[in-house]
Image 1 (cartoon, helix red, strand yellow):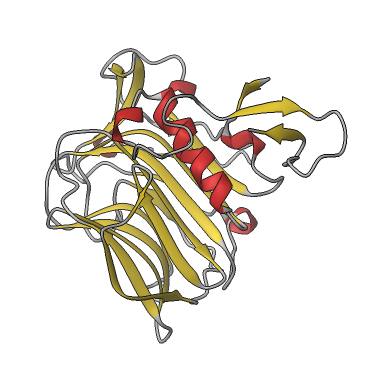
Image 2: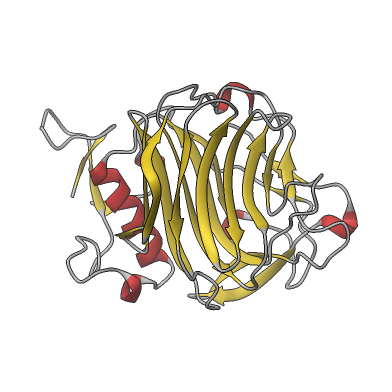
Amino acid sequence: MTDWTPSFLPSGNLSGWYKADAITGLSDGAAVASWVDSSGRSNTLAQSTSGAQPSYETNELNSLPIVRFDKDASPGDNLLLADLGGSFEPGTGDFFVALVVKFVSSGTQFVMAKADSGTQGLNLFISGSDFFFRPQTVGVTTNNLKQSSVIDSAFHTIVCRRVSGTLGSEFDGSAFTTDDGSKVNNGTLSNDAAFHIGSTSTQGLDTDMDLAEALIGVGTLTDANMQRLTGYFANKYALTGNLPADHPFKSASPKITPFKGISSGLVDGGLVT
């Protein structure tokens, strides 16, 4: 039996997986020009402008490194991949995004963004001291979810998803505090526009944050895998104290037994517990 990780999600789900502890060859405080993709899709994030590169900070969270974004840098820190292309084209279908992050200051700041001339976008952003999850298509219902008061200088786990046209999100294993209207959101996300972490690049809406890990994917993130993903994050980064008392992975990380036969508990090559 071994620890469950996002690599055990159904084949093809992950479009990009970015772990600060997967970055090699950098010393404490060094600029991050690229961030390797651990999903197997080779969607490495990159930033060639030295003044816009975030920094690599060692031994920040459970003895693990993080990537630090500073919105006061000029032109602002952001890592971007010009085109996720076919790796992230959910259309009106299911998708998910997840983070282990600490937000440092308030103000209108984009955490992650994928937009196409304002017509389509996967937007995770801070407004005031609140976090918003807003997939957006102009002319289509684009309700969002909100988690209040996230500027507290502490690390948290955030998992957002759309399943059958309905949004759902968890902050430290509990549902977001506020639904802004209906959770229905059936806008299409099928453009080939730039994908950004830490900024919108062109609008100056940059983010102060420490990011330990982030992933994005297509397909259905089930309730069970949503719990496993939060449990993986919380146990890896010593954040289990943030989880609710009844969370199934508050006291131990999720596990998987290698595939040995047929079982109703088999998930993508293993028996998950």
